[in-house]
Image (cartoon, rainbow, N blue to C red; front, side, top):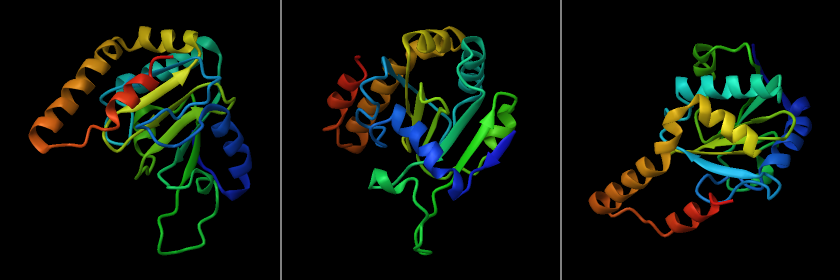
Length: 190
């Protein structure tokens, strides 16, 4: 079941978010140092996980008894502190937040109206995923959590090579700025 969260929930979900993440930029180290392992997930499906990724997440959470409730927050803001504040400027996009439980199907998940970079994260503050506008995600949590996720999503092992090939292509064909790339890759090596 999916619930749209209101401002009355923002303090609670912000606490969970900031237990996992130190930032909101999926192109740099955005996880708290307490998160044991951070890895790349590529490709994702726009602003959503693919069906296989979503299924792997649900199975990993269920097998490890980590969370019964999961949060999704749109996070694309310049100031990280503004993610959980009510927007008073009607000319600016209003970030939205949801919760869902493990009974939520992939088709229901895909109906969530996500329009910008977003975070999917533990209500217990133990793991998280940030999905970028460039169709990659960063996933972090305990070693046990990442191992369980990877076991259920074998395509995970080709994420880094596919990501590198994609950005090499972008650099060669579109002259894409790659200044961020090495720093980002190093941030994944915890």
